[in-house]
Image 1: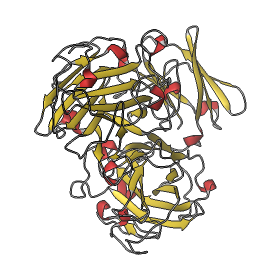
Image 2 (image 1 turned 180 degrees about the vertical axis):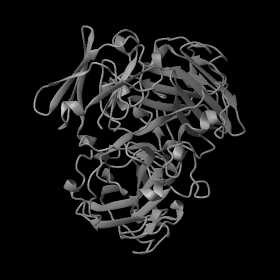
Image 3 (image 1 turned 120 degrees about the horizontal axis):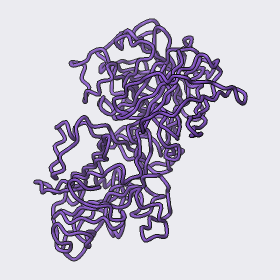
Length: 553
């Protein structure tokens, strides 16, 4: 059974968590950066279909006159006096990715009038905000200071992020990042190029410049685009979330995405009522308006916390995977897909969608022609279902898959059962791509008003989260990492678990955590501590960084 990977000297929860101080979601918005197979060439030309940016997480900030602030997926930012007139006036798409050494951000800007009259082309630290430009703000240690001051008042912020700017004519600004060094082989680099509809901007920022965030970390992040239409200074700034230079307002950027380990249990009764004792050891997935990943083409991402959200639990047995979803929804609407119907427009009603990438190959946009054994399973709050995107497996209590629902005072609940035979028969210990999405229909058009989810974008396997099927043994979600420290020539860390000491195996890997080679750590001793707690002690490794995980047979 695969459990949390643990880096030397710090420990946390999830498959890979490096810094417990960076594991907190702020009450803003959330997106994630995906791992790239190959680094992009930073030349200012974005090709979304190529390998370099095609595997990057992406989202759009667009004009929507039906919204109060006129902007879907973003807001007016610093010095803004009015929103853009339309998408050609100003809108943009953000791409976010990373590899072992760098964070990569690309921004495709639509801008009908290009201005570059203040900051001289290729100059450093000029008045870049007065021209058409892209600003990237990063709080690498998730410190959430009220301001970001690189003058010495908060010296700890230098080396963990700041503001990185590139203009349409490739003037750059790094003063508010502490001047870490700009260039193709320096701490950061960026380039822009003109397009038929505006311009592209590409950034490479060394992770060492951001305080070395690791996979599983949450860092503060936002992107702002300045729009100068008349050459007399900027008309507006549109920003993804927050305020420039104010770390406490930045959004959450997850390095890698989310992961979950499903314990192996006896099968729950799939009746839509969700008894927690039927999901023993399953950790709660808690999704709210702040940590949800929103599908912005389906709707905006700015809603009151009471409007919608969900909790979910996942377990498995020898036969199937079970997913329970308890949805908070202040207005239930099911006026499109009739109760008991199949393959109607379920996404236009209040409904839950679960997605699997059984091969865990992150193969991009899913089609049942390419992989008929996996896909999307949908159930509405009134009992309609959709499985066309799973190649129409059989539906029923003893069939390929099944689901049931019930209403609650706060919304509704749905339980799913998907047979492993419909998912390539994954074995114990296997990891699958996985995502949960909820459609919220309040009866307005177009429907739904929004779609929000756990970790990913519907139908695109590249972005799905990671679901590991525990091999059993009673560990599962019950294993809690308490802490880790260096004591002389030894490493110590504690786990809370009901299992006996002899069932634990500590494994380690060094180097690239994206392609780990796990080996058992010799000479590990487990010492009983407080009730339910065991402490592991073993010799320090000769290489650094080293990552650890605990395996339970």
